[in-house]
Amino acid sequence: MGKKDFISVVIPVFNEEQTIGNIITRTKDTMNKLNVPYEVLVIDDGSIDKSLAISKNKGAEAFREPHRGKGHAIRAGFQRAKGKIIVTLDSDGSHRPEEIPIVLKSVIEGKADLSIGSRFCNSSVDFARIPRINGVGNRIFNRLIGFLTGTRVSDSQSGFRAVKSSFVARLNLDSRGYEVESEMLIKAWKKGARIAEIPISFDQRTVGKSRLDPLKDGMRILYSIIKSYLMG
Image 1 (cartoon, helix red, strand yellow):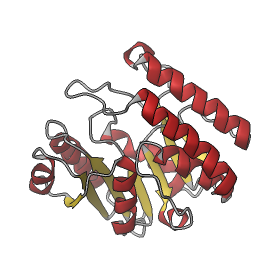
Image 2 (cartoon, rainbow, N blue to C red; image 1 turned 90 degrees about the vertical axis):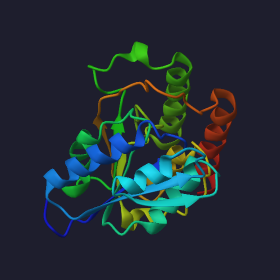
Image 3 (cartoon, rainbow, N blue to C red; image 1 turned 135 degrees about the vertical axis):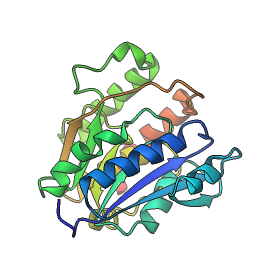
């Protein structure tokens, strides 16, 4: 990776004071080893705990936004990102910052415009640790996206991604919640993006709990897929 490849790492956070510090430290350690210029942007989605203060203390560029959802935080991060390539990963510890290089690789090498870290194309992942309803929902969305686009995707809801910033600017994302991943994927496909899936590890969170509502957020994701396909 050359010095021209400035990387922005965007981490949305909402009340993850127990994990965000560790994620930032590991992210910075990983990026320092890559020997490329980078920035770590933490977008705080209106947390009421110490997530924002911890992020700043760990040396991230941290910004507070009103509590509007993950999609809003991701979009706010995209707007602030200065990198040629943008990486996104979750703040709850389910993604390993040490795997940023493998998610970046195909984009850095010019082989993909959007790279998605997939939990479900890695045979070493213990699927029993993934909540059953989440796995079922993901498979439904994967099949629907595959039917609409003809593109086989195994983990359409993964938040661990790398994408060219020039492509992000063309997508006109408007999601506020967890549906942002589906919206990005469909709109990128419609713009002719080369999409790659990369096997990643998966660590089920051990502190706190997921804020994803399977029914409410599932319906939003479904609506976003159809809307993005028809109107995006």
